[in-house]
Image 1 (cartoon, rainbow, N blue to C red):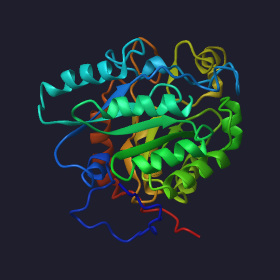
Image 2: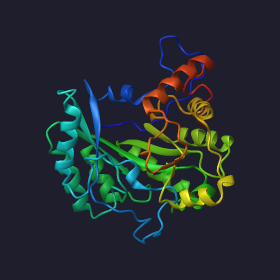
Image 3: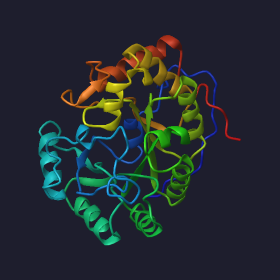
Image 4: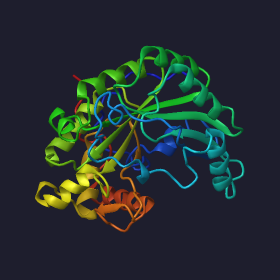
Length: 325
């Protein structure tokens, strides 16, 4: 399933009335599938080089993987069982749904090649699973794995999502990320050039970053051959280094209320290349783990408010995007 690595030139002309305000992930998936498609998270039991000592033992200061694993997603269960449980959960409402196995927890390219291949192919062997999405770090994509994924992508839906988090090396060092932005940019280019759908994760609101810094992230990512992006508001989570830092020095953090975040997300989208699908504008952690911000709103409600606000502001994705040099 080939995927172009070319970059669309930004077009800042007036938005046609019938056009959506931003390029959403559902529209992106319609290029590949008919009908409904649902991602099912799986925990394949991997760890992270930023935790096991190869890079660091502390991990990223914001990270607690328990914030995004659903109940059925337990590493004690096989990948097949996790997927079957997820399919039973979602299939009650939509029996004809198709599914994408989302390798989400920790670093899902951090193991010997034979182990990785076996786990990806176990997922693809489950009836109803039509593709895989692999979340990983940009410093964990060895050439032999990229070659395997490129071959797989010729006949199967494959996405690799890289945790970029910030394009500022100063910020990446502060959050103990363990790599710089150049590493992320190189991994994105190599993956897209291999014909693999390539995504990025970015956190808005990391300590020390201004609004201008965050809009610069949109501009810098727009210069890369990305297909998708996930935005996360900074969430301060119990049990993390950053959560403890917030408790001791709250003055180091600027936690926006929901209205200010909505305008920030819109500004980001306006500076983002229009052919990059925005999978989501924010993430949602369990209330039992979340310190701040506590907005009390579901993601779909936030998205609806962002869309309404975009109309009020006559804003759209790519409106302020700078053309590629």
